[in-house]
Image 1 (cartoon, rainbow, N blue to C red):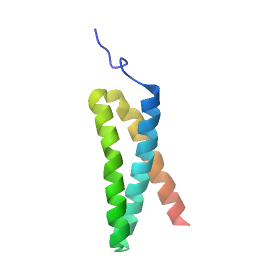
Image 2: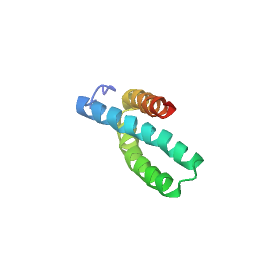
Image 3: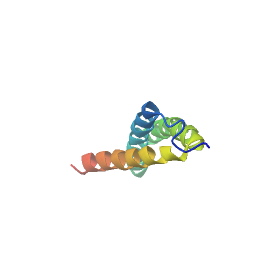
Image 4: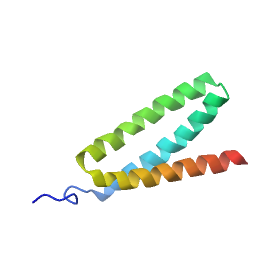
Length: 87
């Protein structure tokens, strides 16, 4: 019997967490750039964000447990950027 823990790689967990911390940090930055009507920053940030999104999609298609570090990284990335931009 195959379980969700089969193929759950700690290194990939860390990679997904870091990637989605960056993705949501970039997404918050992207939103700020769009509101400020900065076309170059918006376009560049959007492209980088979608490149990193692929890592998560590939990971959680193989094993749904990768959604846990994905969500944790997402929360942290947004929190850091919004907290920093308030100052």
